Image 1 (cartoon, rainbow, N blue to C red):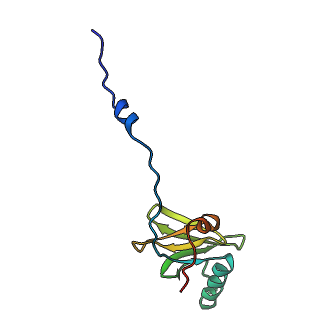
Image 2: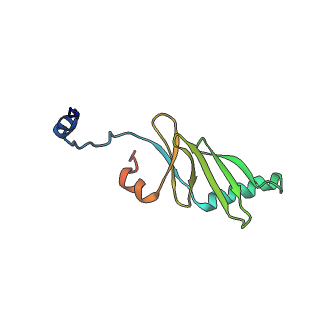
Image 3: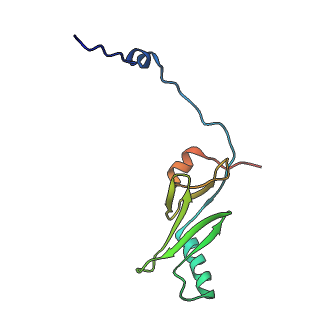
Length: 117
């Protein structure tokens, strides 16, 4: 007796690809540079010279700064997708639900534009 396999292929085949546009929303954003991280680290080390990592507030977001053995300051933020590194020049964005995430400068320029008041 032959096996009969029923597939949803015909249903999938009838679906059509559609185009979508992002809804116009306003977000708060701040471009961060390694000098911002280094300055925050220096200010914190004025309080305690032995500090090599701490949490700093940028735009209300908790950003974890740590100094590596080669004296570079790294920045990380906890996002909905997990911990992400913030690189020199990345934008820090506050999303519509209050979440924070980094965005590369080239992507930011394609998606966002300044609001003219």
